[in-house]
Amino acid sequence: MWESVAAPVAGMMGAVAAAVPAPLPAPAVEATPVLTSTPFGALPEQRVTHTVTISGRGTLTATRVTFTTTADLDGVVAQAEPGRCAASPRIVVCDLGDVLLSAAAAVPRITITGRIRPGVPPGTLVRNRVSVTSAESTVTDSQAVSNAYLLPGSTATAAATATDPALESPAAASEVRPPGRSLRMPAVAAVVVGAVAAGILLARRRLRRRHGLPSDRL
Image: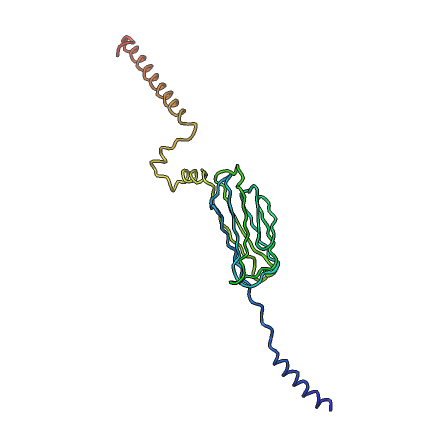
């Protein structure tokens, strides 16, 4: 009897399970940071403003934006909408919390201002980088963007060009004089010429004596 009842019940439970729709997968989260530096190529003692925005779709949980630079900034001020920031001369970290990314939502924005510290040597590579992480980063991985430029006045490129044999013509290479030898070579040549002249004069005098000629005549 129990077997005859259990079979219909099991069938009904299977039918109900089949009728319940499977949960939909969570929509993929896309987050793309955008970095704008104004003016781009700022010099020492010049004020610069870095603006960071995040575009995409989906919801980021516990969102954190990290800004780094290779040139120290004096008087750094960082503001996040939404969220709050902690700033130092080379690193700014902003916690935005949960962020909804969509066409209808406000675009998250971070503004970082400061003055490039004096004394940065010419030729220094100034690299600004922004990364975005969240609880979803384990799936989507963190997103990053950067820009970079060289401070003008570097002599490294010019020196490399001057010493590269592939960029030198044979005529130009033959005119190059090693430092410290340009004054020694003429002096050595003068000594050699003087020794040869003295040898010739001594030989002439010996020849005159053998033939009984005065030393002041040929």
